[in-house]
Image (cartoon, rainbow, N blue to C red; front, top):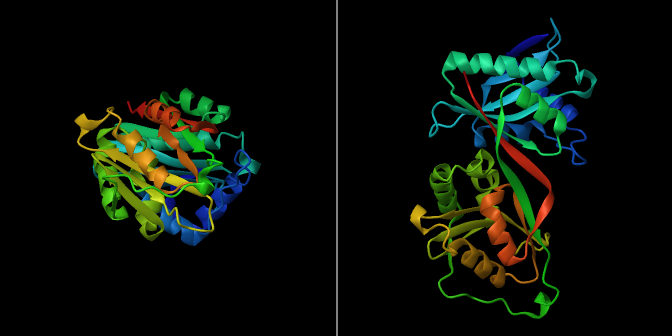
Length: 292
């Protein structure tokens, strides 16, 4: 088996391999067009050159991959942004060889810490990562809230002090303060805000900021919470975030709400309980490896 840099392969080859690997990913197939993957990778700081692809010896057909991401604001850190193996090669050591090659590359280029997120129910993956030295740092959860049955009769409120802000401003705040708060990289990147700001809305109340999907999109009955920031740091854990979300939700009654399964449990649990959210079935573990 050969492990080669991602730059040896076309984006079409990598997308095809990924689609095969995740054709049935816990009941939710993950499928990319080459164009979608082309946009996704730079938005998540994924380096095609430093990513890895596995092939049978002497073949140019990918059977596995490890997408590697790097951030300029976190020198010495990397993220395993995605790893998969096509079903016909599962259980044949492809994942182990990809991780070995990833660690060899990390030692060679001075990477000190590697991060990843993995679905908690994915026992084989967690076993593989743990065997290679990764440790769980924290649990990540998604949250959902059904629409209020009486909301259709409510008049949208305009809470005092609630301001609308540009999505681009929110992205910068999330990246600035999210890094300091040690947020998972998926929240820091905020793919939708970075690539489709015209489909998002931003709000501020006091010292809390949030970005959401467009609540006035008539084609969707659910509003997604894309990201939050409370700045400066000393303003955190004082109810600012809860007050902001309550105000935004009051402005758009009759909607369902959800937050992605990348929110640290310890950050989201208190706010979720206050606002009537329930935890999703799918949770993830944030894992970390100190390269030796």
